[in-house]
Image (cartoon, rainbow, N blue to C red):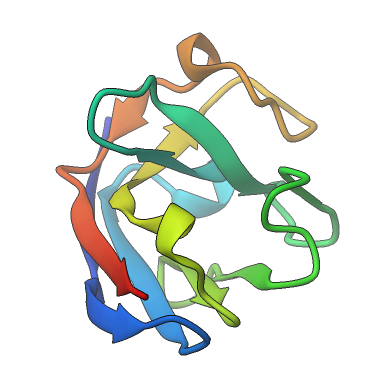
Amino acid sequence: QVQLVESGGGLVQAGGSLRLSCAASGRTFSSYSMGWFRQAPGKEREFVAGIIRSGRSTYYADSVKGRFTISRDNAKNTVNLQMNSLKPEDTAVYYCAADQYGWAVRVRITAYDYWGQGTQVTVSS
């Protein structure tokens, strides 16, 4: 089992940047592919970005491609999401999630076994 704790959310103006971090504890972090999801009020949770166990491959939702960058540090048990050129439509609660069976990045919510509590990101216009 792995425990996930997100941090780094906050309020930022449109065009600004934020860096989210997810700290993992428990079983070997490098055994998991990792993903970031988000959920805006009244909307379903959606995939944002993912990274495989080694960190050598990443995948992004079209809505964030070119603006967000996911990375991981297996020595520090962390996965990060650098968010640039933020837009009001990026406002959501952002969740970190761990996939213990996937060798590639998977976008389905049900593929992920462990979730953090979420961190709020608010982008003002």
